[in-house]
Image (cartoon, rainbow, N blue to C red):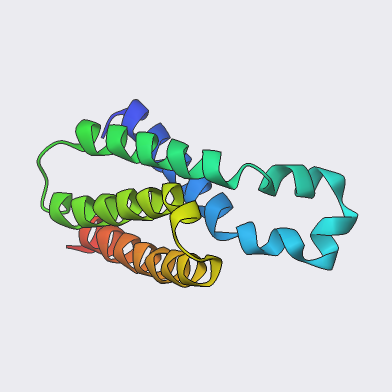
Length: 120
């Protein structure tokens, strides 16, 4: 594994963590701390950066067995971002439900991808 690929893996993990912790930005603890509030604000930008960095990770990783689970996770992320772009066209409740479903699915697919890449 190259150092650049390792950097892409770490960046992907950090961006995913920032995306998944976004619901905490409305908590009282985050509201009291301006630096945390600022950290969680660019949620959409983190999602786009995650898409780009994970794409680069996939290219750098090459043809390995975990490639298929990585493609599934990347496709789920792509659908999640596409739904975010269509947010105004659908009701807020419908969009929020779909966003949460695809977010949980993305996390599950990434866990499967990591387990497949590391242990199998």
